[in-house]
Image 1 (tube, rainbow, N blue to C red):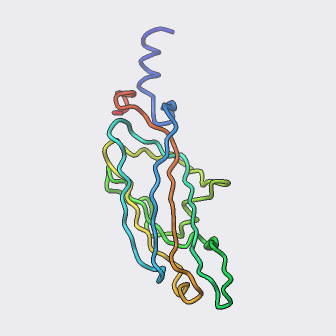
Image 2 (image 1 turned 90 degrees about the vertical axis):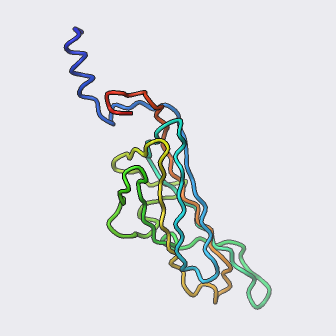
Image 3 (image 1 turned 90 degrees about the horizontal axis):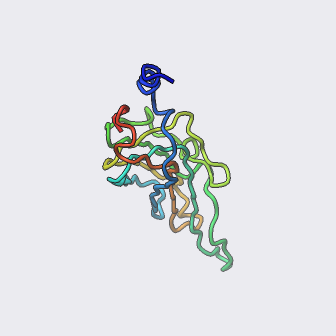
Amino acid sequence: MNQSMQGQQIAGRNLGSVTRDSFFQYAVNITFGAGGVDNQTPVIPIQSDAHFLCVQTMMSNQSAVGASAAGVGTPYVDILHGGAIVQLTDGGSQRLLSLIPVPANCLFGSAKEPYIWPFTHLFRANTFIGVSATGSVAGAAGVGMTNMNLRLIFAGFKVAIGAFPDLGL
């Protein structure tokens, strides 16, 4: 291949040309109190050594349930629709990734069936993933729920800084 053809191929690179560097996951744990409808806004810092290309998301949502009046209870039950509405922010561009908050199960699958993103999303090194989560299990305290634990996991791979200078990465 001559040099002009190589130059055209390099100039035509895009995020689809990024090869996997190393598998990585970022996660955040959110605990909603007994009322179940409070809003929390944790941030997940992206490490400074590499950019993060998100490929899929998963969640684990479990609610601690107390004993019933008869003294018998189930320690954990899954919460329908994720138990929260969420809105994500790309901290590098300060861009929301949805127009409004959506049910958690619209953006996060289970570990068994993860939500595969239709397009990968690059979170730049030394920025953050912002999460706004509002619990949607109001009144659950009346049926013995003491809290709900929601873990959101972002899976993908790291792209080393400087690995693709022609893409600005």
